[in-house]
Image (cartoon, rainbow, N blue to C red):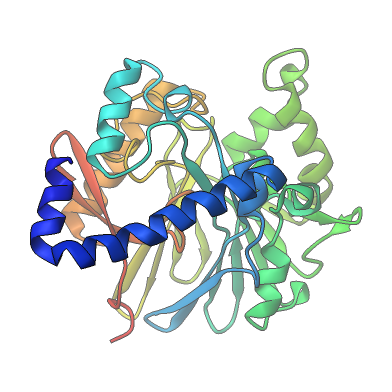
Length: 334
């Protein structure tokens, strides 16, 4: 008997331990049975009905977060802390009560209703992601009472596939009444024919298919650009060449949409220096993480990260060599 089991026995008594142990046995049987019909964790994660949404007030604005999907993404050390020893990454995960052999990546496009505009930040995977259980943005918007025609502005934080896949639906613009806001540096990089024959060629083709057809309705911006009143752009380059984040303010409340500045609530935030596989300029990405989350922690303001645990909103406090993620609770309800 382990020390933990002895402690439980002392606390709960023999009957209590037996009672608690029984469900564990049953769940083990259930898992064994499930394994015969369930071939992957991904299949399990697609069964989220109805679409997950979460809304809250930010001053006079209403913020709606939609879970476009989620997926188990394999060994954490193959994506995060790629310049660290595997056991170092595993140890940090275990310290934070997380498994060391797999992690879950989720995707959270966000709609901000200012009263006069409905501003959508990023579009998820779209129709090409639905076979894998992603691409649920439109479903989530509908569940919250919004039609695609209601969206007046689409802001693309950057042009990776999980952010631009939902721009087109059936070969037509998914948001027919929207204008578009895109970072100039980001668009110039991905739309350039110089990407052909490089590792970025797949992203280049996706931009040509999903973003370039909308360019005539787009405004290309840099830092400190106003999207609509109360929403301003900031540069946070590194994850992609022109990666942008956005400051949202209303009624004395503030929220920073950090997009992919940090892609894991532990591995990216607690160790901002650790390299991330999908950061295109790893040194610049680490510098952006420190700059952005120093601001968020020092100013004690909320942030929404595209890959944070749904509903993807919380705070960052200084912690050891980085930051600790503190999920939102009722701060915006009172």
